[in-house]
Length: 322
Image (cartoon, rainbow, N blue to C red):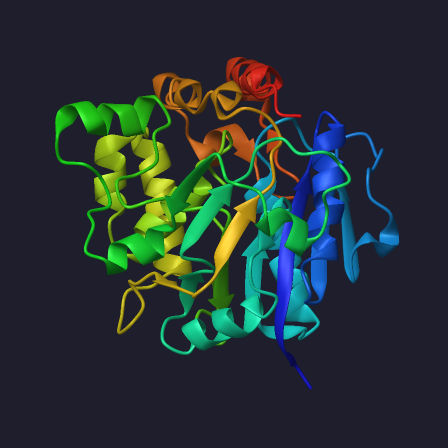
């Protein structure tokens, strides 16, 4: 019998930061549902043990680029092939939900919409001592900032992107969240309702969460108008959306569940240089079909993408993401 729900995460820690490893263990200790983890290592040196998830999938090889969505797709394939669950919560490995029954709320939201954010708000916590691990302890910490989830904010009638030029520029270049809120952290999908769903793996410097959300509500063109995407990148993303999030009744929507998420600190936001990544792909005419090899479990650069490979690697190394 297929279980009602399971959680899926990718463990992407290319520089073996200690904070990311510790955050993962806090995340798992407070999760409360079965977990599939897909960990990637270029060199076969893994941070996690086999029993650090209910199902641990290890992926080796590939090149230094944003592998998160590729790893999640490996996990989704495992869940489908083994018939592990109907509902899949795709959660970043540094998140703790305020409610212990969070997955029940997610499944209830999926009854109305096949793709949802797992939360209404994200509380971004400050750097904390490693000894603070429990949900009760974390609930006592004042967040540095709070961001609405995109699904929740859109339901309040907020626009996806700002209409004034200055704010739109800040959102696209300086890493300011969309007007409606944050697209990432935790989303969930009902596999029976979206049988061909996969995450979009062509955003090799990040930003796949926002692209998925824009596609879900039928606003990819609005995304392309406010973010620099090459023509070939746009075509690749549009083909993915048509296959994985087809238009139809209740399909171009993004719901939300009645939870709050706490995001564990792993470096200052400024250090991630979200604005810098927008300068990498489009100016080089990035074409996923030409520049990356998607034939394996981990993405590789094609031989023709030498300059792109260097630029992406230099960006990821400079993020100071601990």
